[in-house]
Length: 341
Figure (cartoon, rainbow, N blue to C red):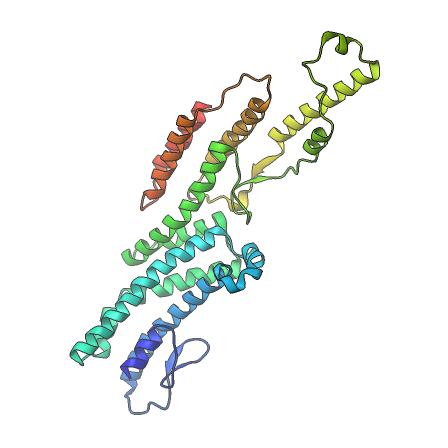
C-alpha cells in the first residue's frame, strides 16, 4: 500500500491508487480501510495529482528541446516564450525538492518499516500549501495564454500571500523570470538590439525598413568626388541627389519617431513603470542613432567606450543575482544610464 502511495505522489497511478481524470483517489476495491483512513490517503495522493499537472506543463513547454521533436520546434516557440521557459526552470527546482522529500520518506520506511499515514502528511506539510497555489497559477497562465510582462504581473499577485512558504516559492519563480527581462533591457539599452523572438519584450519594432533597402539599392553620390565632377552635374542629377538626401533624412526621422514603440500589454507594471519604460525606450533609440551616425565615415560622434558598456552590463548582471527584486537598484541603474546620454 505504501509503495502505491509513494508512486502516486510521483504522479503514477496504479491498481489501488487510480486516476479519475480530475485527481488521484483510492480505489473502491480497497474496502479493508476505514472512511477516515481513506480520507487521509486521498488527501495525500491529491498532492501527486498536482505534481503530475506541473510535470505535464513543463513537458509541454519544453518539448522543443527534445531532439526527436526538433521538427516541431518552431510551432512550440510560437506558443511558448522565454518567460514561460524560465518559469518552468523555477518550477523544476521546486519539484526537485519535492522529489527529494519523497525519496527521504521511502528511505525512512525501508530502514524502520514503520511509517504511518499522518507522519507522511506531516513530512509533506509544506507542499500541501505550495503545490495547489502553484498549480492554480499555472492553470491561469494556460487559460489566459499569458507571457512576458503579463506573466510577471501574475507571479507578483500570487506572491502577495500571508503564507511564508508560498511567498518564498513565488519569489524564486519571479527571480528566474526577471533575469530574462534584465537580459532584454541590457541588450536594448547597451547595444540597441531587441532580443525577442516571441514578442514578449515591452519594446517592439514596428518599422520594417523598406526605405533602408531602397537607399542601399540606390546609394548617394560620393561627397568625396572632385569639385569638377560636382560642378558638372546636370540639373536632373542635382535633383536626384536632393531626393536621395531627403529620403535618407526621412529614414532617420522615421527610425526615431515610429520605428520603435512600447508594447504596453507586455509591460510588467509591478516592476517597470510606464515612465521608466519610456526612458528605456529612449536610451535604446539614442544608441541606435549614435551607431548609425558613427557608421558614417564623415561622423566624429563617439559612442560609449567598451569599458563604459561593460560597467553598465555588470550592473544588470548584479541585479540578476539578487534573490528578490530590488526596485531601488533597478531604477537607479536605468536612471544613471539615462543621465549619461
